[in-house]
Length: 213
Image 1 (cartoon, one colour):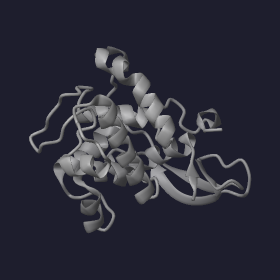
Image 2 (image 1 turned 90 degrees about the horizontal axis):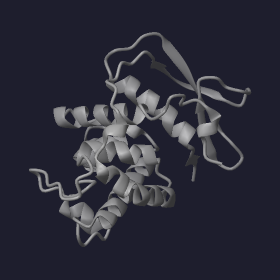
Image 3 (image 1 turned 60 degrees about the horizontal axis):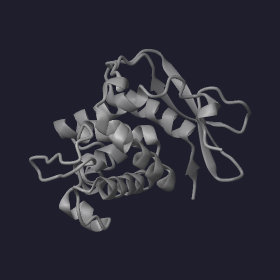
Image 4 (image 1 turned 120 degrees about the vertical axis):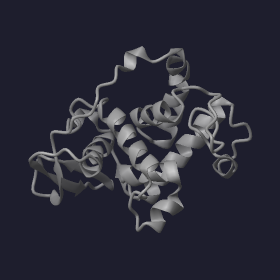
């Protein structure tokens, strides 16, 4: 099984935003390398000839800035649990925070019109699938939601666009449309907003210091 570092996921985010957003400038070349431990690395500056060109993406995206310091007390309240489960399932903590911000704004009692509940807005079927008996239990809700997000990242080969689209519309909807973001305005907006929030937490996504060791 291939392992994706935080550096790789962060750069994959740049590729994803380049596909979702409409404002682009000059292209940047993205290179891929799999090391001896099976870890996948992406970069726009290959340090040796083992890297292969895999894609070109746009730069110069203009996402609205959001001040994460102004989040309410619930963000701090749940930060420890989020970090714990993120480490357990190897999902970027920053990605989880971005998802929760859009899903529920850290309200553990949030309920959507469709019937999704809690911090990560679990639907009844998803909660049952991951053994979440009480969707209003923040700890159980976080664990179930993060496990689901990890499964989506694995299912769609760490493609953030598709994983997030699956989280919003369901993985079957993504597959129905040929492994593309479904043509639903809500889902397309959701993917864009989460990626924008996530991107703001990486000042230098190509910095090797961001990678897992």
